Amino acid sequence: MTKDEFLNKALERDEETISAMFSRSADRYDFLNHLLSLNLDRGWRRALVNRSGYQNYGDDVRVLDLCTGTGDVLFEFFNREDFSGSAVGVDFTAGMLEIAEMKSVKRRLADKIRFIEGNALDLQFEDESFDLITNVFGLRSFSDVEKGLKETFRMLKPGGKYLSLEFFKADKRGLRFFSDWYIKAIIPIVGKIVSGQPGVYDYLSESRNNFMSAYEFDSKLLEAGFINIQRDFFISRIAALHIAHKQRG
Ligand SMILES: C[S@@+](CC[C@H](N)C(=O)[O-])C[C@H]1O[C@@H](n2cnc3c(N)ncnc32)[C@H](O)[C@@H]1O
Image (tube, rainbow, N blue to C red; front, top):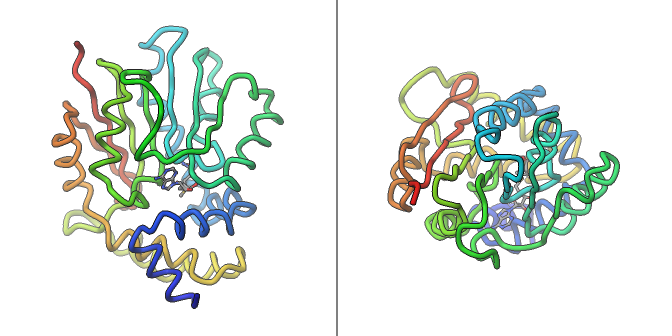
């Protein structure tokens, strides 16, 4: 398959192609993430954990991280001294999970976090199993966003929260010149040089353009049954954090 065919299949959100793409870049994923985001991604994950209000769900708070990749969202929860809950990370790319597992052993968290290979659109967990469900930069690759949100809603306990951090299509509101230029011009070039994988980092720019806007995502959340949607933008509207609630029973 040529580079363009591969990229086009990924943009059609073909699950095998998406997984192959992350598999190829798994070794350098963390390094490139921090480099290309100018280390901002760490602060964004910290902000997500701060906004989760995990303290309000008791000592046995249950967290599910969808599209967990190399596990950084969950490690951010366990960085907090007052976090004493349990966590599951799900991803369909085995290569990404291998890195997550290695990191959890290194951090002595192997008995606290379970990493499971699976598709976030169709999971085996019972209804209302988790207090908090997170998804950081995974939603944009879903082959069916509505199905993914329905599945998330099903697994969330009443009173629980869904937190999504994602890059959305640029909208007309606000300053976006710098972020657009950076994502379109700089990320693909640096990504290609450092990862040695042509095309993988074109995916970020192209898939963002093909995706919905952050405001359209508000509507999808409401349609899936969530209430009280809150939204924060990060630097030059490059990324958006959505927080959505499931009504208490
Ligand atoms: C950009 S990475 C994000 C990783 C991590 N959440 C982070 O904060 O860096 C996207 C991940 O989503 C996974 N993914 C995409 N669609 C998925 C799906 N339907 N089910 C499970 N994992 C999926 C990919 O395998 C990849 O590891």
